[in-house]
Length: 222
Ligand code: ATP
Image 1 (cartoon, rainbow, N blue to C red):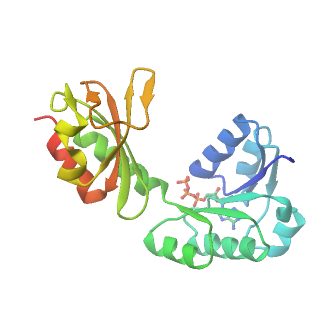
Image 2: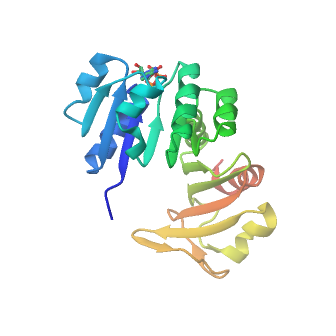
């Protein structure tokens, strides 16, 4: 199988971080920015770094963008340029386009014009941090959709020594425990009579309001 080719357009903090990580993982990555200084910074990091305005269809074609499997559009403030770039990439037939959205309206437009994945790093990170601020027992929080999430929580006194049946999380809160991690062990299909101990890490999936009730009742210690 030939190597997967990536391109990152826009080398602000977000795009740059994706670009560095892909390169660190040994991926072939083309870095594109209209700012010469930014491009120079990434010359030694990305496989190729080029100066181009991504709203110029011909410039993108000249770069051979059609050969790229996955393009990440990380243009921040200039929403117009981000939308236009996405539209051009779509028309050029790029297989996978991931775009960073600046706000909800931007996100809606990107979804409408066919972006394959729209990410909202500031909003998502803000939510995750808010959850970890509410309780140090909430370790991670991942949004699955507008209404559903997965949380990783640390069991405290309230769950210590109880079985899943005792806690009755599904009936009481409508969410599901999908895994229990204890030290290096992970139990991915927990049974009703499995016991949870303080310090275990529990992964729970459900609707946001149900997860919220579960957290309030069993995770956040008084
Ligand atoms: P971050 O928060 O990730 O730093 P940001 O919102 O500050 O992002 P910007 O600085 O607005 O992001 O844009 C990211 C990069 O995109 C900049 O380096 C900018 O030069 C580049 N950029 C903007 N428009 C274009 C374009 N049309 N073609 C190529 N690069 C562009």
